[in-house]
View 1 (cartoon, rainbow, N blue to C red):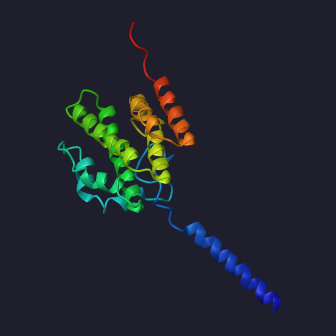
View 2 (cartoon, rainbow, N blue to C red):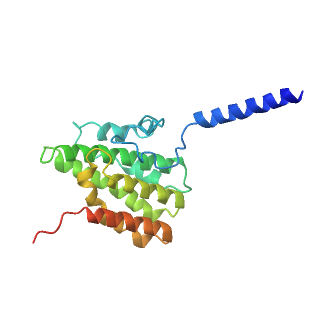
View 3 (cartoon, one colour):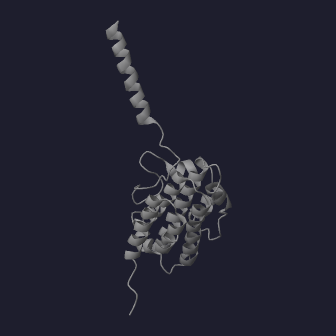
Length: 204
């Protein structure tokens, strides 16, 4: 009897471990950190596939190089700034990140091309969404996720970001005065200083 109980207990523990191993990744976070050079997934987390149904019109415009019109960013802005914070805030942040990395890559890979200025301008408008949300939302976890996005954008890991990362220095530095929490403020300061160090020297 005791042996059977031990066996059942072992089986239950094994099933619980398997359930944890196969459970879907938590969507309420910045999902593209350390995903390598690309933005479509992070390990077993199919980030883009899970987000496209929520923002189909946005992705149709952003991901098609033939489209040069402005995407409607209002749904992303509303979701990222919504209260109370839930999955929609994080979905909006990750959708912004995908759009930024795609537009930044296209502009960086074709300097002087016909869409270079338009793609740079649209990428800058996407950066403004989490920058503004940082001031509007005081939720600690969401603020951490926004900082994680800026860290990723400034890491040079994603295609095209190594050359453009220094542009983020002033954006990140401007968030420091808005952050009352000492640890997160120090995190922003370190990132801003790292990005400033990559700026080319001023011409004599």
